[in-house]
Image 1 (cartoon, rainbow, N blue to C red):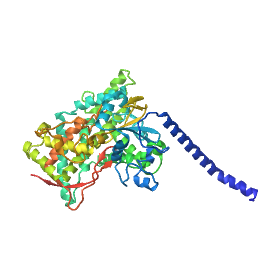
Image 2 (image 1 turned 45 degrees about the vertical axis):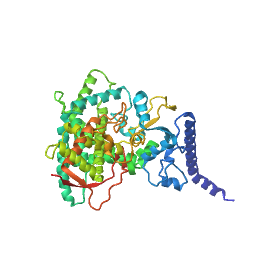
Image 3 (image 1 turned 30 degrees about the vertical axis):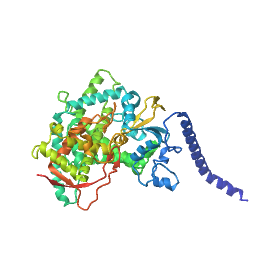
Image 4 (image 1 turned 60 degrees about the vertical axis):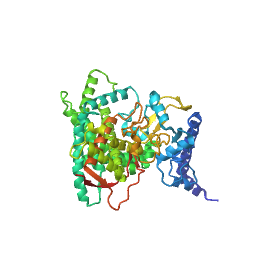
Length: 531
């Protein structure tokens, strides 16, 4: 027997650990009870892989398969490194084109194939046009802006206003062409200089393309362009890229299951908060400068027009219109990030494919030479006369799909869809990758073949199932701008330069890097003038 004082000392020192363990066990039991109760309440939802308690399918096939094999977990995918988008597409072979997943206790329904995606987003827009309350996104966007804001009258009013103003400043019009070409002139000059300095090691296209693309949206939204050597602007573009990467490809993705992780004072969680702060300071400083120099008689850009509309709404006593300085900040952030990241990565994918398929590059250049020549700058009016060039751009967009899962949608009310019950609040993922790789729609869908977008007469063939910008009421607002930039950038650069990989370097893998968008893995190219 132990002496009584020793027992008393032992019990007092062990008690905090016992209490802590009991508390953890109680919390775990509550989570498990909530999880299984919610599963019982979700009757007739689409089928799907069995989720693990608490973490959902993060514990199943969404966990890297090397870890699954270590613990004996089997899944539809058994290779050590797999692309999550391919895995999501493969699940449709097992569970059907409408199936369920769980992230934590959150139900997610994945839509595969064109008919299913079109049916949901085009035929049921009032049900599937909302945006989910994803913790990581909500923390940073406060559910405001254009891209991530919930569907409703305020969002419709904000989107309509921004679309109208951007059109006034050239969106989708020939009047914007000089702005795009101005940036491309800088890209061409810098490409030659950096290529010569590299000594054959190649040039990283990403910062030059990103700067040129971003300056187009900056000229429309912020009324100014930034020099390619502007350190602060270059830092901002890097912050945007890093923030998106952290949110998707780091432990920070767990914020969506445990939101309090966002506030951890270390690691990627701390870095993400700093990225958010730095971007906020940059954009708010520009908005404040616009407010100080606003001339209602001579509005310079979207920010000026929005500030004027805000004043008008306040004067009319419409306090619930949503037009506030705070909302403007999130709109600018949305347009700035979405208008840069998607188009930049599309251009980088196209140029990468030109390097990997030099015969296609040659054919595009031959068509440009024949229609435009070597000495005239390509213009949007040449678009209809360059069908193979257009088909090549479209084929790369089909294969890469820079927003492969779209921006998540949400069911705004409980509904019946394709024989299943979709509860209110369900996250909806339209798998655009599956649409563009569907063998029933595309012959040999994994091969690169621009001719699939040409008819027997060599004319451009437009297909309803080609939807790289999405479909329905949430279709990308910048679709026309992106098409203009892609066409002018690709034709201008291929008219001027021959692109190839540096000697001795293997081509980059084509699986890409998944952030908000699917970006190509880093690569460099050597350029030589064609004149």
